[in-house]
Length: 263
Ligand SMILES: C[S@@+](CC[C@H](N)C(=O)[O-])C[C@H]1O[C@@H](n2cnc3c(N)ncnc32)[C@H](O)[C@@H]1O
Image (cartoon, rainbow, N blue to C red; front, side, top):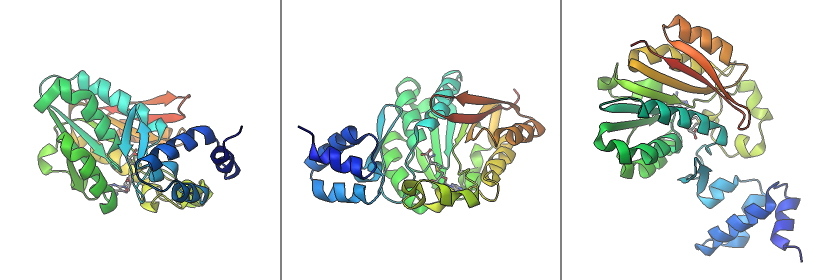
């Protein structure tokens, strides 16, 4: 016999209706009203906001309404960041710029704290106080410091020239394209998390321009982007003295700028 909840979710346009039904039942068994959750899902709220977590790099990362839901494609940045940090010796400094929920920093802490202990210094920043509150709740127990403010301006000055890995998933959707995004993003994620300015690359360019001042010798910048935006960012990074190439993962639809400081 067919499951009426699955049928209802399917009618609402949920592609993975069976999986969503199981997850919503699990959330309801932890105290929420199943009917309330399903009605909100039918009205278009992101599943992750209803569950209170998003699956990311094998973790359940806490998320809440008003905060960007981590995407699978961003796992590419995290994997490369872990590789780059493992290759460093001595103390290592990692920064998750535009951290949103703190998903990237949480995975870095989970993957590396055991091996590196106090040798790992982890910072995260975001301009949105709602995201900063959530990231502080999530990352505080992992010994990461979360700063509120505009890109690198939020970082402690003492980190200049000391950052081993700078990871950034800054907004990169052109302003005019935000209205063409799926409703789950457009109507339920904050505009500040999506809108990358007229051509989508305004924040990305600012990240690349400021990176050389903050990276230590041999330090790495990993910046999520799109295939269309990558060539300009590669030129900009090279012009700033960084050795840059592009990363691509077709399966996850991920593109990133990978740039290294000399040294
Ligand atoms: C695409 S979301 C990425 C969030 C998180 N890194 C992730 O991958 O799940 C972009 C984030 O950048 C933040 N942001 C936007 N403009 C910013 C700025 N000027 N300085 C710092 N953070 C900013 C937004 O608040 C949002 O949380």
